[in-house]
Image (cartoon, rainbow, N blue to C red; front, side, top):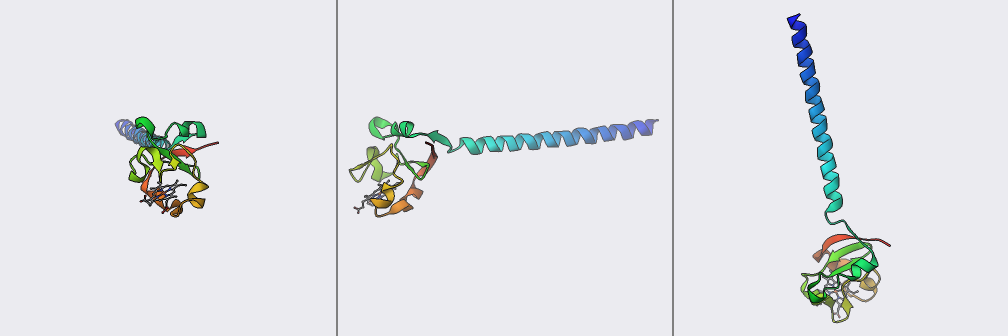
Length: 118
Ligand code: HEM
């Protein structure tokens, strides 16, 4: 009788252990997916992007190919203006290729802050 009880108890503890491990795994996965969507995944449309023009202390963001970059701390984008004629807060997907000599190569200097949606 006592042996059966011991076996029953050890099976019960094994089951509880398994349940605990599963719960921990599920929590870890859930936390992971939340953080990967929240970090650097702010969503902008052209109207909200336009608010980040780098003027009067506001941050300076630009979009290229659906990705929004923070150019606030880049010296060439001081006060949200680049080369005296490109203002932050806009989508430069076409102009960065047609008007700049550096193309998209300079984008790696800027931090990604989100995505541009229609
Ligand atoms: C992360 C974004 C960007 C960075 C870090 C960047 C950086 C630079 C740098 C380092 C130069 C060399 C001249 C200088 O030192 O001032 C330059 C020149 C230039 N960039 Fe950008 N740029 C960026 C985005 C853009 C965009 C979006 C455009 C416009 C579509 C653009 C257009 C130009 C033009 C026209 C020049 C002048 C080249 C010349 O006349 O010699 N850039 N940029």
